[in-house]
Length: 155
Image (tube, rainbow, N blue to C red; front, side, top):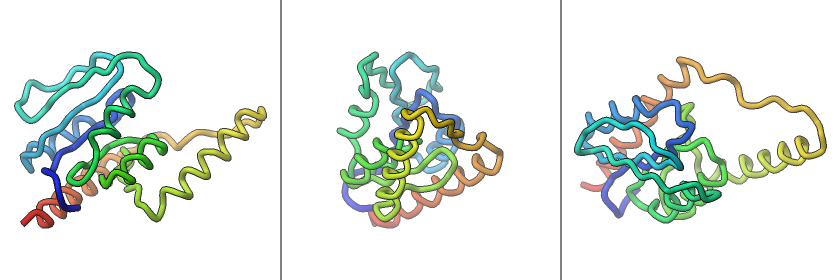
């Protein structure tokens, strides 16, 4: 990760790790933008910004994708948004702590398409596993590592 200033962009509407993002961002003194379609409560802190984009389909995704790039760490579970952000040069981390990478995103997009086809055909397919404490812990660790790496790349 090289180029722009470090920052964290969060796809906020269904993000289960916002508190963890704040904790790591404060420690590293990195700005955070929480992007959502509706008003979300965020801490009153100089490093935290809230952006409400409105109700348009994919409005939050579009806002994030347009501002992602070198120096951005995007937190999202949305595979298509992750793909757009990776192509723009951002690093992308899922709330379960697993990074999306340029080498893994193709398979994730393909799997998503297959699952959508199965659901459209009436096949019953399960969703992702429930969010667990280990996911939260993995996320904290992975976000911290990304910020440390990003800071080193800027020296």
